[in-house]
Length: 128
Image (cartoon, rainbow, N blue to C red; front, side, top):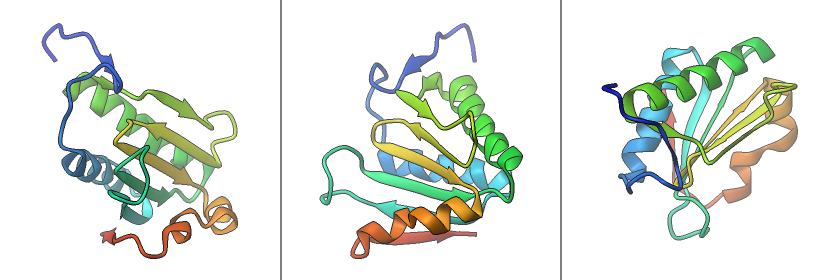
């Protein structure tokens, strides 16, 4: 980054939400996220285009996934999330980039909430 100040997602210029979802999924995958799914919510909800849902085996790993996504988007794209939640317990961490929302769960929390099952008709792409 060349002296560019990071902007919150609601202050940044519009970017392709599908590309952003793919980038977030790629960063999470690089941090060994498991059960990584991109849920396409365009036309189904008004508050976001995509959910990127994944798990880390432990709270430490969920935090590492969060940290990697946060840091890379801040450093390389000068983009900060509008909000971030769940870092305290690190069982369900959320990063809200407006058009794309990242959800990082521990396996137990993901099984309990079953977030991606709420939109059964939404197209989903599994990321290896």
